[in-house]
Figure 1: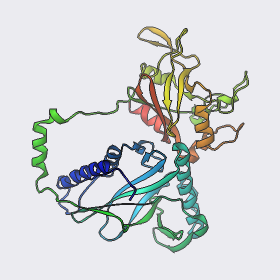
Figure 2 (figure 1 turned 120 degrees about the vertical axis):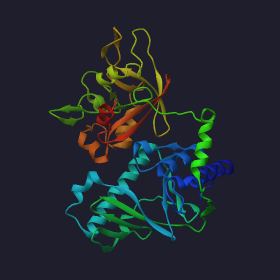
Figure 3 (figure 1 turned 60 degrees about the horizontal axis):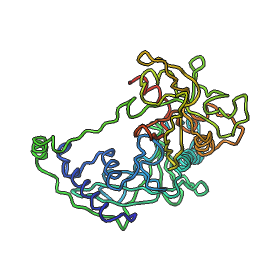
Figure 4 (figure 1 turned 90 degrees about the horizontal axis):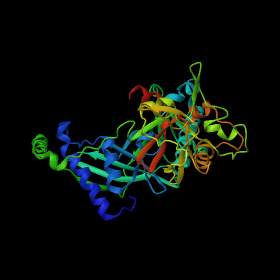
Length: 389
């Protein structure tokens, strides 16, 4: 397995074991139960890794420049076939193709998703970390997180549900009805085995814990509009989404002065300002309110609100700004235009490009008044956010 500091690894095993011992809360099985989100959160807490699960990209976590896929599943033998990707948005493109062509197209989609995450998060290396669950036992191991080798793809067989294929390194299976790609994972020779004694009566332990809940419980839950907002880098035209040709992600194409080809801003609508008036700082006449904007690739830029959008808040007319941009006028653009979308200079962003990569929204998290974080979110995340806040 990947070399982790002993203290962190010991904490990790302790936390996993504690949750596994509580399996009786959910099942009478002798196979420990650990919810996949719990496993992700434990990993990130123990190793101080960045949790990427919210953005729904190829990786679940990041440690420095290493992207990590986290999986937990039952595995009574030495291998298991597990889901690695869903292609619901690509289903129509896959309808009429079969066998070798289908295997190749699926592999392209899978590789594009990995490469996009590599660009977004500046990933140089990657791996899968697995928590397999057997009878009264956890089995931990790492394995490769590689692109599918397009030159070595061979069809194993066509099935009623879809196809099975290999690239000479890993075996894959595709289920058409679920638009889901699976990969077979084998327990490695250097796996770590941990015996688990599942508690006979976990409810008794829970009752004891809650007798002293004030000593232990401190609930931290992100509040929409206070801790984060979701923004759309697009507008609507007759109900259809489109990217503004001379503003927002195409601000470099605006008329007037000569602009850097990386000059962009993320539009912030009046709806966001009215719903959450204190999330972003106002634009003041005699003072520029800068804050640090932390990008997923580890870079940090000074950022500010830009342009004029006067909103009446608590009876006071304030300029809250129409967008969020980095003070260098190009930090965001280098990440979005060149890294994520891989556009050439002087090439306009179109909404279809966002559809292709599967992400059309961004989340802005407010750490404090001086620090904000940005990341991508899947298609329609902005509408979901507005509808539920």
